[in-house]
Amino acid sequence: MGESLFGAPRQGGVRAVDDVTLDIHAGETLGLVGESGSGKSTLGRLVLRLIEPSSGSVLFAGRDLLAASHREMRRLRRDMQIIFQDPFGSLDPRMNVEDIISEPLVIHEAMSLDGAPVRASEFAPRRGSRPVCAAPVSA
Image 1 (spheres, rainbow, N blue to C red):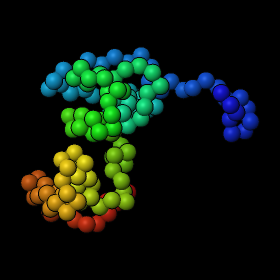
Image 2 (cartoon, rainbow, N blue to C red):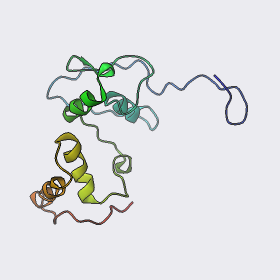
Image 3 (cartoon, rainbow, N blue to C red):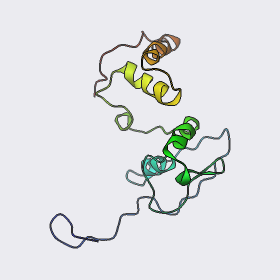
Image 4 (cartoon, one colour):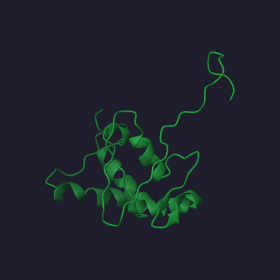
């Protein structure tokens, strides 16, 4: 186990998420509610394999996500979504709005770096906003 920062023996690992079973069918939405620090975000990150579990299994549409390659996970994440309660857990304040909207277009839709900003600028007028601007998101 090693030693802690101050030389004391390390205690056992932290179990942020333990013994969780979810069964979500096509078309259903799951909302996780719990106290701060109860593992909601950790569970979401585990399902998307943004972090790796120490044990257990994660199945999506009958597919073992822990056995999926990086490339397969990128494809599978197109059908998954996590929305964090804290927007700053999802948004990078160093990126402008156009980049934030463009990033998933490049990653999930294999759109070119040149084409994504053009496509991203089409989203704002649909919802009644002004066109996507190039100013950074304020924190």
